Each structure stands twice: as structure tokens, then as C-alpha cells.
Image (cartoon, rainbow, N blue to C red; front, side, top):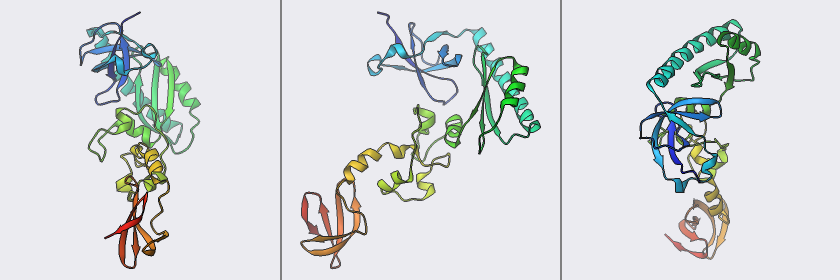
Amino acid sequence: MDRYYVYGVNFKDNGKIYNFKSKIRCPINVTVITETEKGLQFGKVVNFINNDSIKNIDELKDIIRISTKKDYEEYLKNLRDANQALKQCRLLVKELNLDMKMINASFTFDRKQLIFNFLADERIDFRELARRLAAIYRTRIELRQIGARDKAREVGGVGICGEKICCANFLNHIDSVSMNMAKNQGLALSPSKINGLCGRLLCCLTYEDEEYLRCSEGLPNVGDTVTLEQGEGTVVNVDVLNRSYKVLVNNEKVEISLGDESGSVE
């Protein structure tokens, strides 16, 4: 059985890290040529990953080789050419009067594909644009419409938690996030508190939503009227994770924990 090493590789500074397998040892910070779904790519090894923490290693893409000086020169040329392609694309967008904002462009290392990312409020018919670009660059053209979350992933940044934003760090798939998740967790519904850099709801609201739903089973809502031994009162506070709530009865707060329906008076 082949012995593989697993490394984390990124394709731009502070970019998302992807796992690749390799039959050769690769020093940290060395640049490598990797196999990806879009073709060969030039990246940098940023960490070594314990094989025991990886399932289905055989399904990972391969590190083809440690890059050479010639590879690095080709990578720099691809960056320059992609920057020029982006400028050319913006001119064509203006000429064709397309309502789209081009964000960036990149060649795969082997130049078999030229990828453009753009923002648009609606679906865009970019077939003529793709034809013109293909005629100029003689390679496969991919135009990808991205949303605000995808733009944040491309650009990167630091979230309100002080860490690199999740979408640019480790998320492979961005789940849908709803306002109900913020309500379930009792968060203040202020955009400055629950929105990320992209202006959309924070991705991390999904991480604990299932646990909050589980803990909230059987708990009343703030404002509900409940009857206790001390009398009838109104729920004024709910602590979901501790599965407790406070009830105002005869101007006194009674704290209730599920399983202790008598409560204690504050």
C-alpha cells in the first residue's frame, strides 16, 4: 500500500487551505504544483496534517512536484497575464453594456482555463463575452457569478471574533443562514452584531443552532404567561443553554429550571 503524506496548501496569501496528498515529503512554506479539478495549480505548503485525522486519503488530489525556478517564473507570468485579461474583460463588459462587475481573473498553472469571477444582481447572458474572450486567449473561459459571501471568501478579512473569516479559512460549503437562527440564540438583531463582512448573516450562526434548538425544547418564550405554585406570572428571561427561565410573579422574579417546577424566589 502506498504511503502518503497529507499537506495543507493555499493558492494565495492568507487564502483558504486545501488538503493534498503526496508521496514525497514537502517542507513547510515550499511552493508546489498540485492537481486540481480545474487543472494544475501553483500553491504553497502551509502545514502538515496528521494522516490519522484524514478519512479517504485516496480521494485527495495529488501534489505533483515541488516547484522549480521555471515553474515560479511561469506562475508570475500567469499573474501578469490574468491581470491584463481582467482589464480586457472589463473593457468588453462596457462595450457589450453588461450589468456585471468583474472581481478578479486567474489562469490555471497549465493555462488550460481562464477563470473570471463577477458580481451581478441578476442572471447575465455572457455568451458573447465568453466567445470574445476565448477568441483572444485561446483557452477555456469560465465566467462565475458570485454572491456577497463568495466575494468575502475571495477577498478575505478578519471577523468580529478577531479570527480570519470562516469562509476564507476552512468552510468548503456555505450553508444557508436564516434570521431564525439569531432569534433561537437570543442575539440582538442588530446588523452590526449578526452580519459579517459580506453584509449577510454570520456563517457561524449555523454552528450552534442545532444545540440551541435541542436545549430550547420545553422552554417557554419571553412574554408567555405561566402558572407556578407562587401564582400566575410572565416569563421575563430565558436561559436556553442552562434550560432555565425567570418568571415575574407578584413583582418578584422566580427562577425555574426544568425539572424544578417549584422555583426559587429572588
